[in-house]
Image 1 (cartoon, one colour):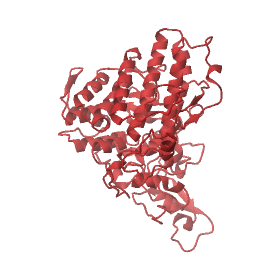
Image 2: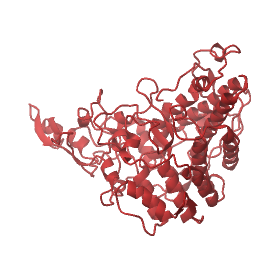
Image 3: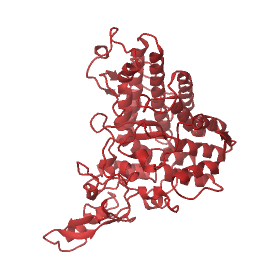
Image 4: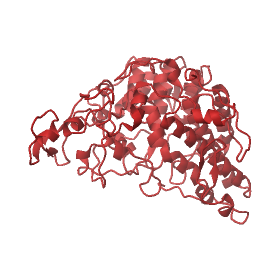
Amino acid sequence: MKKIWLIGAAVCSVMTACTDLDVPVESELTSSNFPTTQEGFAAASGPAYTQLASIYAVEYWRMQELSTDEAIIPARGGNYNDGGQYRDLHKHTWTADHTNINGCWKWGYSGINKCNSILVLFERAPDGAAKQTALAEIRVMRAFFHFLMMDLYGNVPIITKFGATETPKQSTRAEVFTFIEKELKEALPDLNDGPTTAKNYARPTKSMVFALLTKMYLNAPQYAAKTMYPETVAMADSVLKRTYFSLDGDYMSIFAPENGPQIKETIFAVPYDPNYIKGNHFTRFGLHTSLQAKYSIPFRPSIALSTIASFYQKFNLPNDTRNATWLAGKQFDFSGAPINITTTKKGLDQTMPVPTVVPRSFGSWSLSRNLPWKMCLTWTLGTTNWARHRECAPSSFILTKMPIHKTVTRGNDFPVLRLADVMLMKAEAILRGAAPTVINGEMQTADVLVTKIRTRAKTTAATGVTLNDLLEERAREMAWEGWRRNDLIRFGKFEDKWGFKDNDESYRRLYPIPNNEIVLSGGNLTQNTGYIK
């Protein structure tokens, strides 16, 4: 179920996100060919899922990860400077005209309006169980897009009508929270339940709603100015009591090229396929060029993504399998032979005064924790092999968490909600005051839940877990999965100093509403605090 079948759907956001104007909606679905089966509704709902996939693993991911201590994209000469956009995310110096901030707003509201257009079509279809399930799934997808916008921008419009002519009005973050909660609960009875199959994989299910509500309730102090820790535990338990979910014994398999419905830990994922559903660029952006042959990559990766030393140092538990998810130190191929650098002396080290004319091998190379900046203003490491190899660089997401695999593609599905996250959220809610509960005969304290995660990682059990310990565990378990910004804000650490960031402005917990959207809103949108000039 890597391929979500598509229909041509004409969708134009009532904001500025006008996309996919290839064919009229009516040319695909008419009164004579409305879907009536589960497969038919699944095919007709494709645009909502392909919209989610389009930039979830690129621009959206950058806003959630490059703004934290987990990931960094340094420039290399003129490469990856890109107007300083990655540097601005890391240093918390973005403005309301930042390209990712604009792009994600359009992406999110285009997704909402695709859902609204699909709902209009589905409501005209003949009544039946398949129709009710399809309507519920798209309502959840619309709520999920609203969740992403609420998390990023705070006070945002709620849009539930397709083709509205009036400019939507802004709602408070608490109002958006209430709307999402209501939509999820009303859709819940008509959603599929049971273990993950090829038919319900990467689509909303009851468990997906429970996991998303767990996330919302844990973050309720930020979203709705209230605490909901007992409710967090209750929603987590609704997932944990379903015994068909389990932690996969092989942590790396969750992120492997062949991941999919067979992974019993994944609750909701964004599916990717290098031919049908593009948008997973981690192989390109995260993998070092010298590893192209090792992992049989059909293109030259561009060595963009890295992490910073202080985050890498969190991977320090004894025998923890997650320690190996980062590429650091000397690099070897799968036979155990070292991967060598072939270049000139000048190409190896730009400080060498005289280049060697003939390239030759300089032995195996090593990824270090040192970032030797050459020009602080442009934040660059330079373009030579000397610069490229002196960094603590994780490989791409798909390799960062699966170094045992010998091939990679851009078709690895991206887990959005998974069982380990639910366990850690429950543990955190307990540490914040909720009572432990018994699930399937087991009293689940914070120590018990974190120990389950550590046992799978083959490291030491947890004892006396504190909130700080919990945040460190989330860093190790959930690295690069798009939740670090969310976590740091909840723990009051988004203003901390890390890497090359010393900006402590708390208003940056929310991104600004794009300036052009405010202009086009006709006065219906007000800029977030701190960004008003």
